[in-house]
Image (cartoon, rainbow, N blue to C red; front, side, top):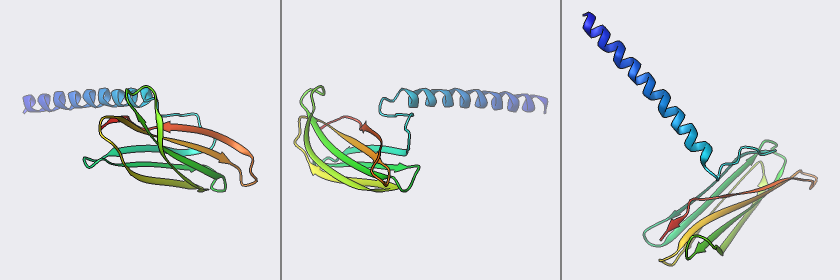
Length: 144
């Protein structure tokens, strides 16, 4: 019985240590992501995502929300292409605007042999039109 209890205690200690190490590694990975900006004035949430399906159809998506639901949001979603992943050119642009929370999803077919990504630009203004902040976020880069 003592051996079983000692084995159980040891197993529990190992699980706790591994859990702590995993949580620390996850925190490091999140903080090193260059697309995450933590110092927004009034943006509560800002995400951008990009998918390329086997058919060549892409899905570009962005969502932005503000702490003040009366602030006006202008969102521009830009699908970009590159030959080498260094210099980017714009292929297509979608826009959306509103207040509180704004999202936009766009679909477009692309040509194989290039790198693709999506960049979302956002500008926040008060209901009276006063500028609050402007920023952008870039999705993952995908070679298709």
